[in-house]
Length: 418
Image (tube, rainbow, N blue to C red; front, side, top):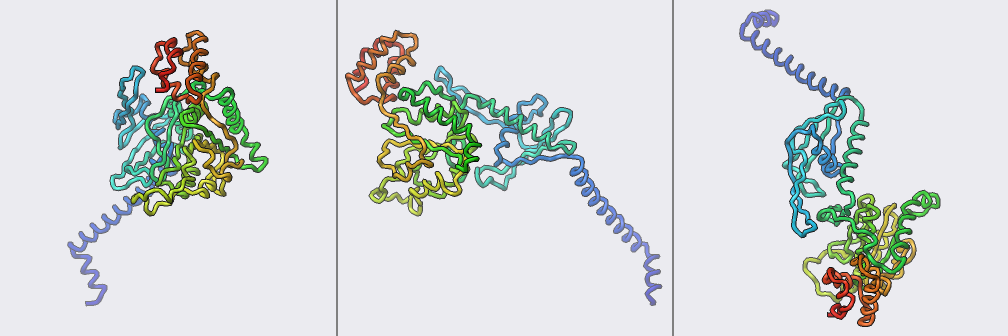
């Protein structure tokens, strides 16, 4: 049968006609479906603005906490329980709420905003070792300034919640992680260093913070290093903590003696420290100990301990960060290499030593502000008659034992030597 006649016969076949019709309907539906998806995508790009915030970004928790306190927020939350010690010594339980995973809606001015918190069950954040999450904000229009204003408000809210508090960060894995709850900032005057010593360091730090352009104009790296050395218990770490509170800075603590810390990790943490923070290298002399005589710990096999060259490169190497304040503490300055102590690595050295008469008088008046000055004079004289080397930690502990009886405290300093 000729081909034209065969095609004509198929055209008269009812089954073929119905199948061809269904095929055309399916093809048309597929084209419409794909066209609709493309049209929606084009409309989203042209008429909407979307902001995605991953869990690894600093603003992630700021935005969640800011959204949760809004009155127009939907009532679907996740909770984080926190414990706080009250003045009475009892523990208070607090609850912080954030939007739960899923979709939420609110108004930002006159614009509706859709909030989607998405938690990936099969993915884990590489740095934080927690389920990977994102928060996606979507609103009408093509104005990204709306989200910029939202982020600024969320940041201001977070800073207000942390006002008069000091954050402590410690290394966790490959990143800095907040250690414990924020600590109440300590007044700088509550740390009794030698007369003029606190003021001298405070003025130097403030001058450094306000002179970034001066450093740039002269081609000098904008960083400053401080070394506080002296016997234990004399207030080195306490002063740094109080100074951070006055400057509204956080503290990033690095233990040089940590056997898990290598030169590469030290450099990484020095460069990646959170903004507006003080880096504290505690007991920096630990890097100069002779470890060849120490018993070998099987856990340390394959570990590269911090070396002198690693510390020097982290402080002022080619890739070291700028705008950075580093405080180092040691009880044994004689163990430190001269290369570490040169200007550019350690710019300011302060000897924080045992308490003198004037310090003990100030400490007495700080603990017993309503008492007669003669008690403080008697206390300092009696202490120095008993022993020459008294740390402020010993003085503070003694005052806390007798905080209700200043007269007894001034006359019975012999208990301090027990």
